[in-house]
Image (cartoon, rainbow, N blue to C red; front, side, top):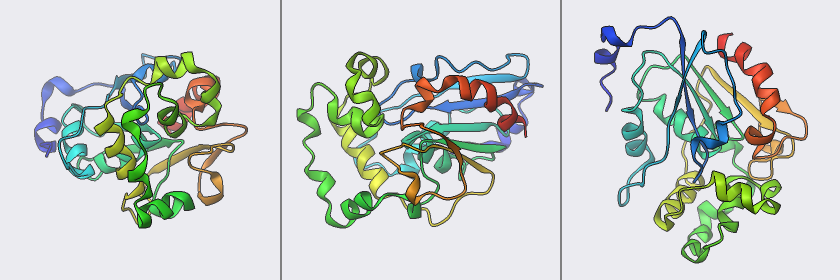
Length: 232
């Protein structure tokens, strides 16, 4: 577990800037944030990336490993999709100023019925992810239907292609256990998200016509609105 007290007392970590850590969605790399531009005199941006999970590793254990890369006191964590779930788990380990999730869920109550069905039937374990060499299945789950027709884009953004990682990630999402939202969580969700439909989600900032991959193509909205959301 991360030693929060050590970090809080580290003189090399002091800064007037607001530290913001970005976590991409399942199988994605930090390039999904390439068009997000924030004032560098106000914000200090850091980009987290996925590690391969250990055999039978829990989400909590995985979150502890990723949390060790966070070297600032009271950071803001911003996670997309499965990355949004992960930053919520990290926030249970270290003290954070704020959590922002995009195209994600705040509790198991917001998971769509098809994922609840998968949890009880284990049907997701029958998905032949090891056979999906063109990433179509992963792209549908990670970026949504919008990106399916843009093969060159999800080849660019989805770089984690290890079958065990993909199987593990889907299983962690389906079996995530969080009864209620963590305080200070801000939820930004597209109204056309097909992975986590807004029909099941409460208390969020709606992005009209935003899909699951809106962090990529709705970057103008984020550039205009994120500064106030981060500073509020």
